[in-house]
Amino acid sequence: MQPTSTYPIGTPGQPWGAAERDQWRARQVRQRSYADDVLTAIEALRGRFDVEMYGDVIYGDAQHPAERFPLRALRSRDWQPGLPTVLVTGGVHGYETSGVHGALRFVDTHAERFAGRANLLVVPCVSPWAYERFQRWNFDAIDPNRSFRDGSPAQESAALMRLVAPLHGQFAAHIDLHETTDTDESEYRPAVAARDGKVFEPGSIPDGFYLVDDADNPQPAFQQAIIEAVSRVTHIAPADEKNEIIGTPVVAPGVIHYPMKQWGLCAGISRARYTTTTEVYPDSPRATPEQCIEAQVAAACAAVEFVLADAQL
Image (cartoon, rainbow, N blue to C red; front, side, top):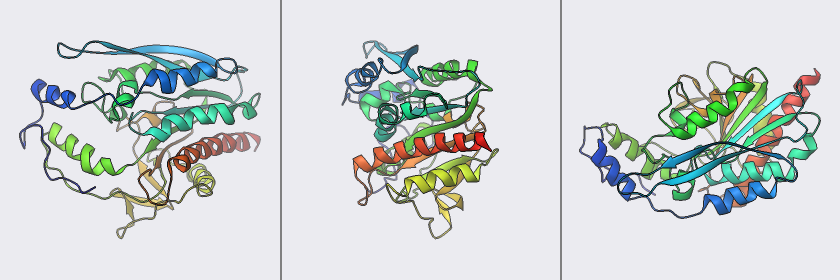
């Protein structure tokens, strides 16, 4: 899809107000069910894992009836203090499907083999309203993945931070499962420029999987272990002619750096030593939806396996 130079909502150069947010909400259509796809899958795992309700997301206004989304996390049933703890999150951006289903599949097919060796906390779908509408933002036109900070304006981000806070100091690793899609360039980057009253500057979408490490706490060996595991499932994104991926310098094959805490990113909330954000490319002609889910599973497994190997050194 070709990027657009304008967005159909708002006045160029002027940030959105309430009227523009209402126009944007009117364009959002429910296309799938969080209850059917996610909550039902979590309930099916209840016999093998502990299920924790960590809050609710409630949205609505004069034009939209209130909707309530219960938030669920999965925990290792044999949780043991002293074991390395790994946090896996998916669906911070609701339209990034493989992150949600990759997290669920990781729990269903692999989590039990780490029993007694690592504690796992898995949050498959952080943003259920956005999941149902294939949307990056929440109901308030806020990006949850720029909102993980004190006093967060995003209900989803605030709820996850409350869940994680009591475990600070226990996390060895946090892997946050994402996608980079063609609609990032055709829809979401133009939308954010319009929302903020800025000029949209077209970019490019990398063809393949890549990782975002923390600029303030780089862990290259951890990133490399994940890249190696995922490369057996799908291809790794090459750098462009500027040796960049999405406008950011490549520091190792398939790896770039962002300042996670400064930007309010999900992967910065755990205070873990090892953190990363995965980015699968589901629109690639070289990857199938199944490969994208399996790439997320491979990444999560590699993260836990790296932590366990590190603990033995």
